[in-house]
Length: 580
Image (cartoon, rainbow, N blue to C red; front, side, top):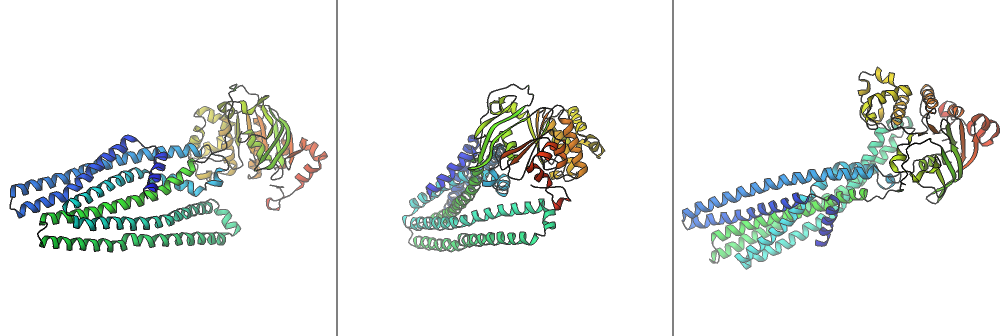
């Protein structure tokens, strides 16, 4: 058991990296108020002793001693809680920063190992729980010391009475610890199911329209029932052991207390002890009982908090796929992108096979192909999320992995099919990239969204609800493009930016792309025929290989695969083809 709790405490110290000053002050003040606790039964016994002896001056002095003991107990307890609050605050802020730093650099595999529910619960509840650990540790240390001191005091008072004290201490700790360990197993299972609840409810609220239109509410209810069943099973098992711990074990306490009363009465009759010693023994038995309860409660809390420690640590231990950056700092970029014999595999599955193409400035280069043909992988490689197995990618004839991180990031940006905007004002979303107000307005005018923003009651101060649900998809896309332009990137990647838009909004975005190519290198992934027609060059992919390069007109006339590609129709999209 000692080894187990040592491991718990060691894991906590590794994670929290707490403020040592606060921890030391918590230990000192805990020691002092626990010491004051031990003086209270002693003062009470002295009062009884001197009353029976009719020594009233010493009785009053003992009463003053009792008052002082109470005063210092309250004082040191107050100081202890003050430092507990400071440490909790420090720990909370520190851990939130560590989690944020980790999550902000994770790769696509992160969500395969850490589900969203676990992440959100860790950020909210688990970090708060971990803040309590420091207080639990100091309480554990002081409770152990207090128990030892109490047993030693009773042994010095009377060996016969000390025996039930020691036996009681052993059995009580053993049974409480056993039930706590069992309850902890099912507590962990409960936590796991709470994560599942959070993920399910998040999916239902965000995909409410799909839930209604596809009629899948019954399937989701079945999923909820399954989670309910698993949670209930874990809860009921945990409650069974908690009842034993918090209720049934009390019979043990009452039995030992009656035994000690009987022994005290027996020794009192034989005049081997006096009334004041009886008061002292009974007082210290109550203190021992409270101290052991505090010890067990603390160990139980440490075990439960260790669940939170492990959950947060599993997030922080995640090792993302990292690529070292170079030290080339030239920031004067034309934006000529070349793929030279690029091959790439993921999980031992070939994705790209000997890819060669050039994307030039002032041109729109469209990458097209069926799902799984490698389009998104090309963008991921351009974003330096992965490295190719063979070949090299260059920007202005310089290998992209040789550029310094800040230089490369400032010269290549992506706009996704469903761009993310924060639940902030439009201006605040722009401020995250560039706080220059004039530049923000200039970029919004360029993409044609400024007039719409100004038509809103609060203009640029309009708050965008979660996922910008209070504006249309086209307006959200244009705001996202304007935000991307604030980065001053020379190379812009657009991933299916018109696929989910209506025809009018898609047309606006296509016009914006035509304007942006005047001073950018534009690469787009698309399945929209209209955008293919307006692209200057098309790269046609099939199963990771390039099977066609050219304009829409040339490919439509001479490339059999491309002709089959654009001939595909999607009945769900009113005749607009869709092969994704």
